[in-house]
Image (cartoon, rainbow, N blue to C red; front, side):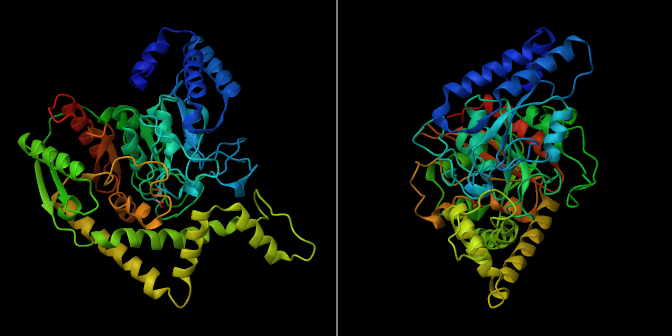
Length: 485
Ligand code: GLN
């Protein structure tokens, strides 16, 4: 049971409730306290959130103009900087580190009246697909606590899934918003690369990273995207393209679209049989409704996960070099004769977890002079081919659809000893980050094992309005469909 079905409904409630923000924050605080075992939050800003709620209630009562996100209760993945608050990327190496500025996205949320209730657990430095790589313990899926919520933004997905906040922000480098959204049965969207500023987002792989949004419906995603998108003097990779009024442009329609799907994706060995079947049935139902849905060859499928892991580990090895025991957070205790190199080595060995160390080593290897051309350059070439494929594809189609993940949420511990198998869980999501297009996972299906799974939709660069419109239409249509499991 959720407190509100949408931000709009909540704001209508506030119009008639003098202490509406306070009672709402209290509602979420109670839910968080009653669901501690999920481990979705690393910190809850109880006193502060209540105080901000009281201030917002007072402003409303005084008839002041209200922000677009007036009173909306958010949680932030622990890689997004919030001034005066700790941020740790769920890593021991950032122990005790406090943000000295706000991420641009946070600044924009606050300017529109949002309330931030806490920071969410995640995989260390956003590296993972199960949220088991956090230095602060795994997050549990609220539908079945023996299962993972997905990762790396697992805590943020569960926060929305279990009604611990209204909306949350995560980050998506290779699927970390869409994959946990799929496992938790919520909406998870990653916009185009360059739509939202990365200023104040702790970098994992800078040419892939984007902030993404978890919500319960498309209208909420639209209004939050509208607020946090746009150019920023602090991030030169953000687009200067004007930000559409997504919240007004997203409407229910019965427009017919041209969808493509990659044949190899639905025939892939690792894809759960039932997910494949239900997706195919769904494709047939879209065709029956008058949409065009066509199979397209995609011979590059086997290369996308290796390409992703070569490029992102290379970027990560560079980005994470700043965590050296000197500038931030954790510093190892030194023995008498230890020199500066020993300080770096010990601090990094003790501060970083196993998966982060694995990726730094991999990234350093693929960038080393003897192997650079064989790995890094090759991977860049594959990335170019993928971009060409995408350009061609969107000349003929509005959108590309696929399952979001090949399986439903797996058991905690099931894949944690096998990194390759874990990496393959990203096979359908990394594509959008490699080519920089917007992508969403919408919670359409239910598996016979009782778990939810989603449909992923991708569109061309900066076509978020179309992406949200398609998503809204498909979600609405599905409510009345006999495919609903
Ligand atoms: N699972 C992917 C990885 O481990 C994606 C992570 C992300 O999107 N931050 O790299």
